[in-house]
Image (tube, rainbow, N blue to C red):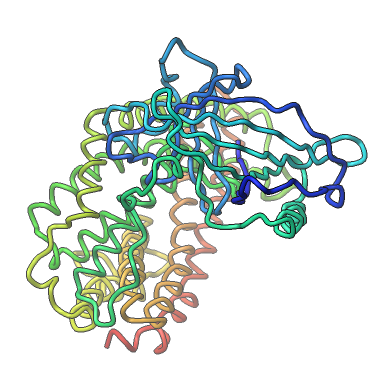
Length: 506
């Protein structure tokens, strides 16, 4: 569940204004809530915008609540559960904070007593659009009140986002102060250390090469951490993407960056980290591959609505994929719940905080990095190791050779993107151009893999004539997609080679 809210600081003299301009307003009877927030001794949850709360005098289904950050300020993902026993955190909520606590023990970190008066803002039919809570908060130290503060919290329920703007204007006119979005328990804890995965300050005017590779590592690790809780929930993102995919992208990018910039890093340390990332990538890949096939099955089946394949046969193929997907997800769950994974998370945090840099990493970034990026770029252009270069791809080459170029395109793109803070917009232009070419190669690979999968589905049911015909038709559509991708690629590749994209590499 997404929670969208805004907070405002007010003093004891503040009086709630007339909110009638925003809708029909009714006030609930004030209630007193007692909330205990749990965290590690280092406050690892609070430092990353995560909270785990036990609240008394609340709805029974919301006794325990975890809130996870989103990319939008003031919007958090909320997950609540009833009590699992006296003082026992529901295991599935504890699981959601794994990446942030990393095996550390949780204990009470802040105890708040809040006297809350809620004003409901509803439409003419009585549907609640927003709730405005007037909270007087006491931070408790045992039985004593350490300090108090008051704040107004506005939460959107069913109203449009602009309704929050209207309510905000009314509150500000009445003397409320808008500021940074700081949760109550964080205010209660006082000054906290910076998050482990904090966004660093802008690079210095003449950064070292090590500064740039450290930032690339941080971005990759942050992607893994951010999507870990949602992969456990098997969630679907608003854009239709999945957390498993995003975790896999983060893992792949990190492995690629560690290899590309290995001259700036300690080789033994890099090798160990890449080996553990390969283990995680395999667990993510098993789940993701079936995920992609199921989505593609329905897309390919619907490609020509005038001559659709037999729907029951399509559903039988999907059911067979679903049967494969569940053990793949179970294997991923096992990996994410393993001690090995927690140790990998610790290693990733160490990689962000204290990367093992080589002597070359102390050199100026603008003098070192273009030469490093040139290597994966030349491997993409010229090939090597028995694989063709991107410009040498021809329609008669096997699928595997096209896939090898796709993998090299990813590495070159990631490398250009990583150095863009130093090189500037020219590197971003190259990364975007390669991304477009990579998209064509990705469609080629997905279609080739799917084509083989549909034939395998028919082979697994040799007596099912209808399924065999359906699989054959799906196969033909996929191979037609392969042909189209091969025909489209040369023109896309020519755009990559434009001088504006690659002059900085020469």
